[in-house]
Structure formats: structure tokens, C-alpha cells
Amino acid sequence: MSGHGRRWLAAACMGALLAAPATALARAATIPPSGFASDGDTISGWQWLRRSGQTATWTFDLAPLQAPGARSAHLVMAALVTQQANGGSGYDATVRLRLDTGGGAGARTAVVALRNPFRPVDPDFSDGLGYQAYGSAALAGRAATAGGTLTVTMAYPFSPKGRHVAVKRDSLVIGYSVRTAPAPRRP
Image (cartoon, rainbow, N blue to C red; front, side, top):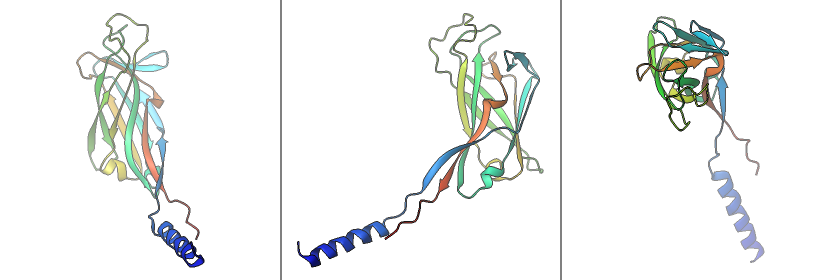
């Protein structure tokens, strides 16, 4: 290839690199609760909601969601689930969460399907083995974009009827991604 051809090829490659759109990078982040309260039955550090009227409430500071590039917020829950007191392993549950951002905006509801990957599903007492269940729900609307605080409340009963669910402070977090700009390209 002649000198002119090499210069043309080098210029074409550099132009293609500079013309290519920059790829946005993202990183995952979480917001832990700033407060937690529950009137559930305390067993081994967990608050078991298993009777009518028992609740668990988390409070979150939503300021991190106001940062430039913050997007795609979700409530992420890790809980214990069984079918009765001294219950068995492998059970799922569906919980309703009441979301309140205050300021007269009104409360909304989010539904989290807690899926338990443990198998087998067994009704016999498992001494806690196979109770772990996980789920998430998109945090949309005012709850995802408002500043201030978010209060999330979960109350017994759950679905299917009779499920017992245990939580603690770190059972619920807000997961979100932050889009970051790549370093500028140098010619």
C-alpha cells in the first residue's frame, strides 16, 4: 500500500472511531432503608407477620434518585416465607406494599411476588431450611421521581391465604442504575 493509501486508511479509521456513538456505562446501586419498624413476632432477628394487623414499615431517603443519570428504580425484597408456624420449605407468597411519598400525593400500591427457589416444597417443619424468597417491583411514577422520603408498609395477610412472611431492616432496598458518561475519546 502506498503512503497515500495508508494515510487515507488511517484517517478513515480515526473518523470512524470519532463518529461512533459513545457507549453509556451504567452501574448498579442500592438505597438502604433509613428507618424500619415492625410489630411482627420477633424470632431469631426476623419480624414474622402472621396475624391480622401485623405490619412492617421501611423509610427511604429518595435523594440518590435525583442524581444525574439515576434511572430504573425497583423495590427489591429478600424475605422468609412458609405456610404456617413451624412450617415447611419452598413456599412462595405475594405481598402488597403501600408506598407513600407524603406531601398529599396519595399512596400507591406495589405488588411483589416472592419466589422461593428451594425444592422440594415440603409442608413438614424444616427448622427454617428453604424459607428464603426473593422478589421485586418497579418503582414508578412519583415514588421514583420525588425527592424527600418514601414510606413502604407491608401488612398481613398475604396471598395465598395463610402464608407467613418474615422481614427485617435490610429485607427491602431500592435498587437502581446510574448512567455514567464514558471518558472522552482522544484523537
